[in-house]
View 1 (cartoon, rainbow, N blue to C red):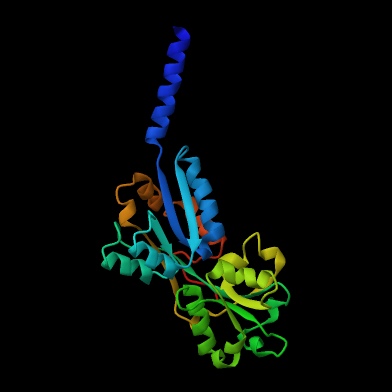
View 2: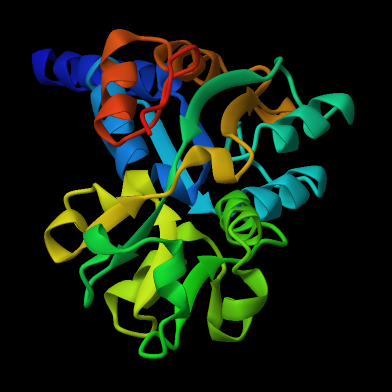
Length: 256
């Protein structure tokens, strides 16, 4: 009888734990790859048993998928205008929360990018330049703006290869499929890429600000874990991790 009671108690505890555990799925712009992974790890220490899944991709594609019913609970966009449009369209359960301003850099694994500028991209020995697709990737759009502002777009356009998102763009350069790329500072300074190449910070007066923001989606409206995670992004540990990866926090001034 005592053994039966023990089994029943254990089963009840397991049921109670599973009944109270929650799960969210986060759609996050690819520039957040390393920062978001660390933020989620830190968040889960205080939310043992809860599940936080994250999918990385281009903000424009996520914007479309959410309108088509994709089951994301939060959407972190590299362009704040995408979540703003979702709010207007009735696809959000919260207002847009700015969380960072991103920066773009020239990065190379085979050339010394620390001694380069955008003008260096016209050199004959540079034949392939990777940028994210400007049609749906905010970092690609800002790369195009910087090249146009420098009067270089037409000169280098034939050399461009387009990544689906900023992580794939960095992979093109890392694997030698492009000699140099315009990627996110948050990736260039990451533990994975920093030892493999150097970068040159592109002046932010050459492009519109990469103002980034997130929302809780309609799908996550009644998920308390989604609200807890949204609040956590304002915490000191989360803000410190964003700064670690080169993001400029809202209200702060970017370095040149």
